[in-house]
Amino acid sequence: MKQEGSKVGILFPDGDIKWLLYGARTKDGFVYGVSYADTHITALPDAKSVSFHITDQKSKNREHLGRIIKNGDYEDLQFRALNPRLITDEDVDEQVAYITKQGYELFNRPPDFILETENEQEQHTILDLTKLFNQAYHLALELSQNPSDIFGLCTAKEILMNKEYEAGFTARDTALIVVEGDLYEVNIRAYLDLTDSDNPLLEVLSPIGLPSLMPELKKRLGEIFEEKKDSLEKYSFFDS
Image (cartoon, rainbow, N blue to C red; front, side, top):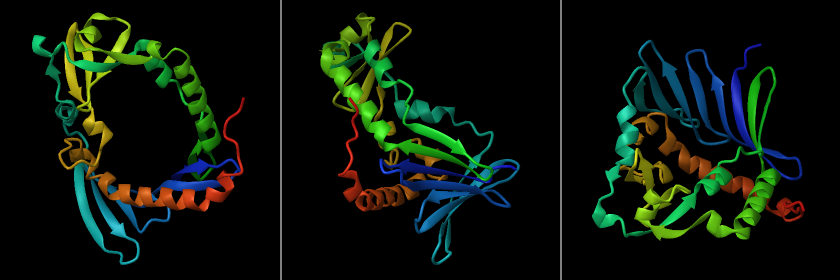
């Protein structure tokens, strides 16, 4: 049987799963949203594009969010969001925070706290809270042993000169990266705040409803952890 839907949830230490997001096929397209929220989003594809609208589940009122062209050229959005700038000699003495290649690999280890399960009707993606805290705990232990092997402070020029450094980060929410022997500053703020009204990525994110879903998602997370607050206090998350 063809799967008709998907869910994203959180697995708590007592074995209880709280659902966070959902998606489901419809006759004409696809619906998705935050579990138990007041709204949902519908995607309606045609031959050349996908149209999106948000529906208030109580009043049934609909609002058109936008349209994404299937073969549209969106490659410039990421370039505009990163806004790369070549670092000149005037800026090479700026103090920045570095992360080493070892540190980068450490933070990018495949997570073991994401569980994928499925049945004939649905696919489930579940965040195992106990495993998440355990992985964070052991990561913190590794960081505390030799922190300078992972991160520290240096000048912008050292990011370019030291091959052990993966990248640098400034206080302006920008990153310094080496591209073909040159040092560039790129703006990572767009990826830290996906709902910023000046974010070029909103040209794609707004039609699919991300800014509309974020308040509902925060509300749902608050409800879940308030409901599970007492049971969480009974468990120790960290193994030895």
